Image 1 (cartoon, rainbow, N blue to C red):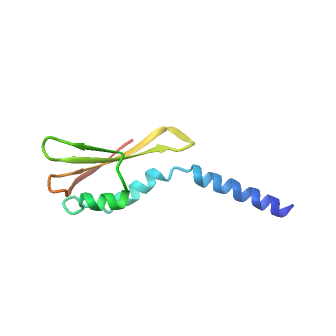
Image 2: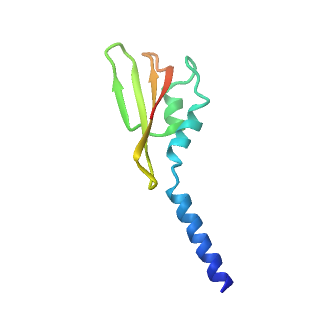
Image 3: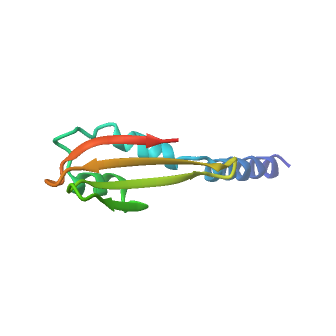
Length: 98
């Protein structure tokens, strides 16, 4: 009986971990070491993976954004991080959109 309870607790724990919103936290923690004028577009792609969208402005700036949904418990909430790069592919700024 004790082993059944242990297996049940393990299943519940794994389900909670799988449903947790780690996507936004991952982007936030990875972007904390980004430095304007130093971090390159390649650095951001290496740290965050492929972006959800890319916008190239007429002035030569490129904005890469990563969007994560809120998961099972906050399904209506999307977190978005956008990193703006200059024509030299060096970071200008990081913005977070709730």
